[in-house]
Each structure stands twice: as structure tokens, then as C-alpha cells.
Amino acid sequence: MALNSALYDDIIDAFTVDTEHLREAAADFRQDMRLGLAGSPDSSLRMLPSYLGLPTGTERGDYLALDFGGTNVRVLLYRLEGNGKYEVLSHVAKPLKVDGVYDFVGAEATGEEMFDFIAALVDEAVSGDHATPYLLGHTFSFPSSQTNINDARLIIWTKEFAAKGVEGEVVNDLLRAALVRQGLSNVTPNSVINDTVAVLLAAAYINGDTKIGAIYATGHNTCYLEPYTGTAQPPMILNMESGGFSKLVPNRFDIALDAASEKKGEQRLEKMVAGRYMGELFAMALAELLGATGRTYGFTSVDLGRMLEDVSEGAEVTAKIVEEMAGAVLLSEDAVRVRDLARAIVVRSVRLIAATFVGTLWQITAGGEVRPQHIAVDGSVYEKMPLVKETMLHAFSELLGEDAAQVDTILACGGSGLGAALAAAMTEHG
Image 1 (cartoon, rainbow, N blue to C red):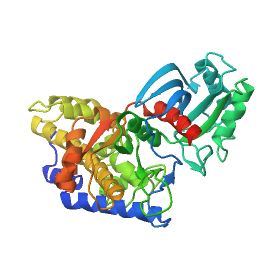
Image 2: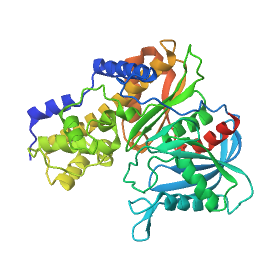
Image 3: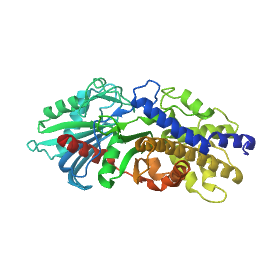
Image 4: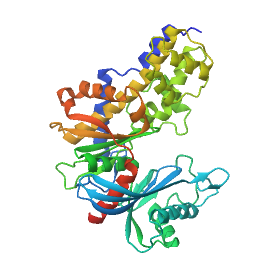
């Protein structure tokens, strides 16, 4: 089956971000940050306060961490030893739902049942110790409104969660009540943070010189330390919910994907860059090339990664994946083209995220010099997708010139737990 080659050039073009558009995206992102800081409704960034600065490296002691970001919940007991050193003393993880056994996620479940289950995990993590006082930091990765470090009120469940009696409630109040029911009145939840903030806290504790943290996985988000130069406010980490950035020019595939999505018009950047959507964009473009517009195939970002790992001349792995998923047998020159399409979608994703990082750097430096620093990134796409790191650095050098040498990206694995423990320690001494 031969591909439509005239259409091919047009599609590759639709997924190409040249230097001019890259610079525009970075400038628009910074402008949205400034509008958001000023409280303008014209910003597509949320700029949510975390009520925390960066760790100083002097954090020491034993702290509990609850990592609640999806159906798998983890409770860890950390011993912070200062200067970026720590030890995990215990680690308990269980899913909130096991098919046919129990389900604390679905609409039949109550918040009370869900938090009782979590309190039992905390009990296990402290080995049934109901005497030693513990402070607990909570990474809670659902849309919440927060007016201080301790109280996050769940706005709406996402990720298939539907348990009753949690939306509109302060999650640490529900957790505290469940801990008391479990006999754990010695455990005090004292902080709630978002997973992206947790990534930044953990990376800054271990590496220093880190002021930007991001998640680049199924979804995408970035937070940073706002210096508040020239105002009375102390520096604070702000969660931008940057997946919602909307000052970009979508191509026809982006528009179609958005129109078919659960929340139309929302999370525009995320739908152009995140792992959850890459396979879908690829499938829509491939369907057009195969003359089967409107057909759906179940490609994922993992499939795109496998295509990009295949450096053979005839792109045999790509041809095999397309045959399995779409039932189309490709000529080898067409398989190479399809691999180039996968590459174009991944490269665009990285370049757009790099532009938002540069916009954030411009905000942090306020037009001054760029000091040596890391951008901490957690997530499967950043960790496993070919081309990500080199494409990111290339985009930095296009936008930052010589200053690009001062900036690099580092993998920040497992920040959700360590970040929560640090939040508990920082809140205690804050």
C-alpha cells in the first residue's frame, strides 16, 4: 500500500515548529505567566501557590509521605539526613481498586472508606506504632484549591475517580479523621502539595540550583520558584498547571483531537505534547496517509518510541508495528516516511515544552543573566522516549544562544514521595 506523498509533506509541515514559532511560544508563555501573576482572566495559566519555597538542605528527621496520584497509593517513611541525603525506612503500596475484590475509586465507594483504607496503609508503614509522633506530607495530584500549606480542597475528581463525599472537601481533614479512627492520633498530616511541586522539592534537595520542576509523562505540567523580585512576598513555588496553556496555533489534527476529547477547549498544550495524546495524533495523521481518514488505531507513545529506536535503513520495526496495528503493509520508503512522522510528532512535543521552559527561565531571571541551573523532569516520556534530551538542548540553544550552556534537564525519579516528606519537614520548621 503506497502513501499519499503530496499529503505527506503537508502533514510533516503541520507538525513542524520552526525557530520563529518556538520563540513566539516562549514569549507568549512568559506573557501568560505575568498576566497570571497579576490575576488577569486573560491568562491560560493557573499560577497556583504552593505555600512553600525551596528546601535549604538542612531538613533532617523522620517524616511520613503519602503519595496519592492515581489508583496506586504509596506510603513511605523517610529519614532525611540533610545535604540531599535520605533513607527510605519503610514503603507500603497498594491499589485502591482490585477487580472483583474491592473498589474504593468507583461511584459506589465513599470518601470515608477510601481514607480508612489509606489510614491502614499508614499504620502498616509505621509498623503499628501508635505512640511516636509523626508528621505526614501528602502529595495529592488532583485539581484542588488551596489557601494554605495544610488545606487542599478537592475541586473535582479526575482519572476515573468517583468516590462520594470527597469533592468540595478538605482532603487532609478526611485523612486526619481516618487516622484517628485507625488509632493513629500520633500521625499529623501537616502539608499538601501537587506532584509537580514534589518533583521540584526533591530535585532541589538533592541537586540544589534547581528552580523549575516538570512532569512529562501521560500528562504534562510545570512549576517553578517565583522570585517576586521587588515585591514584599517571599519567593514561592507556583504550580502553573501549564498543560492548560492555550496561546498556541493548533494544526488540524490537534483541533480534531480536542473536539473529540472529554473536555473540549481545555488542556490545549497537554493535548499537543503529552504521552497520552501522541499516539492518537499519529494515528489520525497515518489514517489520512492511508486514505482512511476517520479510522482509529490504538497507537500509544510507547509505539512511537519503538519506531524511533529503530534506526534500520528500511524502518522494518515501524512497518511491522503499522501492519499489526493498522493492517497496512508498507513499502520500505513509506515505512521510513511513517517513522519520520512519528519523529515529527515527538520532536514537536519536546520543542513546545522546551519553549515553555525558556519562557519560565526568562521570568525567573527577569531579563538578567541566566545562572547555571537544572530543570528537573519526572515522567516516562522524558525518561524513555528517544530524541527527547538532545532535542530539548537544541531548542534551548536556538532560544538562549550562549546562555543555553548554563541550563540542563535532569531526570527526577520518584519525587512524589521524597517531595512530600520534605514538605512535612519544611512546614514544621517554616
